[in-house]
Length: 328
Image (cartoon, rainbow, N blue to C red):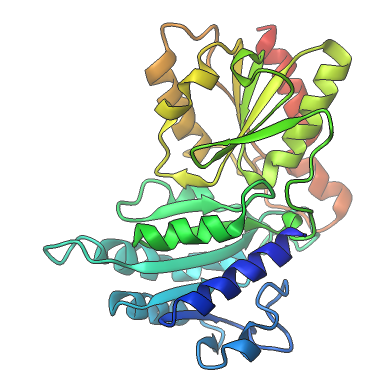
């Protein structure tokens, strides 16, 4: 099963089992089924609860937040995550604050889905990774889709948290197969963090922490450094980016010779910087070297494929960062 099919099925199950759930967005109705076909078939099955809207990210997110405030479950599809900037006020100043600003905790079952990232040739205004702009907001959780996490469980966790959640879905993952790994690797789940490793994850030379959209590039780099240099890595792929508790991962981190955080985002105030800060707090006395951060280039994302590859985070960058960290 491909990631897009898994997400479609998860959304369908949520609508089936929660009669107060709504899915809202531009062009989500059949036969179009959304820009990436994630909602295909859902409006036919649930015609009163899959709602197409005018082109107004602020308006449709405000509608969804209002439904959530009244006790319903609302799922928003932002056509491209870049446009979440247009809904920033509704998410940050209305939805996130509504959880706690009325004197007692108010459940807010709101999920804002954001197809994100480059690699598809969509250009500067349709290819950004804006996760860092939603990190650290009280009452707001940030998740990222991966091919290693079943979206049924991820959506269920978001709904159960009863707080607004922003769900970043890297567009390059939609056509990937779920849980498809090179036979060289093993996989398990620690809490909500997928671990991919060759042998003992607690004995890896290098630990890489990367969200789902970057995981495939990290895995390719891991494979190459093992074949070329016999360096073993363990990849940690979280489902929830924020809030994120590094302490539960310390058994995997504490023996590593190097720790690297990779993300498809420009540097500066990022999720990765927050993770590095937490690791430094817990492991500063035993770390052999500072946590390494790798990002995409400080640039808009070009449309031309050969230029886009020069800007976005690549396997080769992660490969180089691993080797430099181990020999620093």
